Image 1: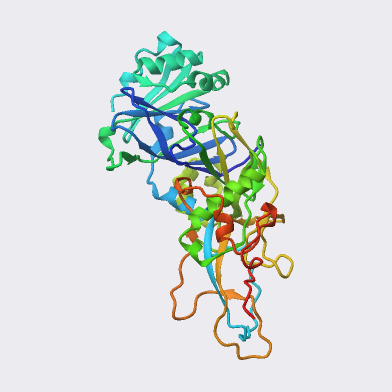
Image 2: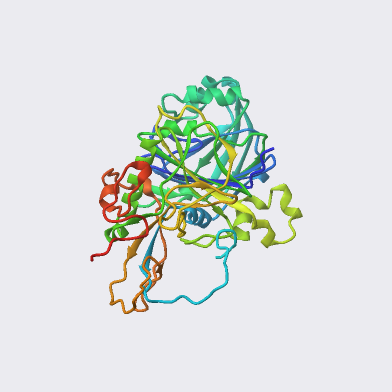
Length: 471
């Protein structure tokens, strides 16, 4: 039995975003899911799915259609605050740090051994329910939560479900019947969360952030239904999945897997161009590993180094569903509830032609990489390697070599730390919302100082962590 506590899906793309369901709009309007973040908490057979959505389109009622394995009841559904989604995304996002070279004449005093790697630092629901029977569609449940009017449907065939939604005056994109079919054959239900646009606030650009929606159910399977999201796809879609599990990282079982190159030194101008660099690096990595899902982060959930934001708290665990998973009643205290968990971030980029099945997850062996540690005494960890615990991250650095006078006979170079006393320390910069960034493959060569052997990219100036100095 797979025992997963939390998995999170953050979805980002330029004109359309990957999604484990799709949008249908009333009045013939065309909608595209603009940004979606999903958190799946799972233990045993219990899954808790939390979802935050933004949509862009006319201010009319619309609905999200999501395949679910069982009929949901009102007590299974609630709304959440949206801050948790921003935090979990920032915690595992690719990050940019700045380091200043320590005075080469500085003599470091003796200190205790620290284990940073393993330690912890820091509406009207009746409208949808009256005519389903004529198409083999049955309304299994209907209720309202917040601004959502929710209907759970079952269907005998895909064409009947498509016809029912059309009769209810929803515009169904071409190809919906084909994508409905495998879910109906599996006996899955369809969670339709209709939104009353009068209950949400629209921005001037037509976008509206809805209240996050959470629901839970029991099922033997642990997989992510993403094929329906292709209905809303105009171009490439980015799919980012976060998995938080007890003593375990995860990868996909039905697609290739690869890790992102990390510990690459960047030129100072990259401070303002970091998102451009990262999407270029990601595209290069995907080209070298066709069809792969890229691991960007696998780290102990109770710590981070460097930290764009603080690790998840016990309150965050409760928000994401710890209040409804079976084992939480057996936990001795809040501290124990979070110990031993590993947060994994997976990133896929695909279109309608390259994703033919839903994502299935499997347990994977621990990896390390992307830390400020020398792997062979001279080079930083640019790739991933197997280890007994997980400490892998997509980390990139701008380094400022020592430029003042050297007043000792045996200077020691290549030691890095915070800024000089007259400069303020800046927090690590997380690369978020990269799907909206203009993609330029040449940014890798233009911004990378250190070489990237696995992608055959020659650095501008130096090997990782050791900038060249003028003699």
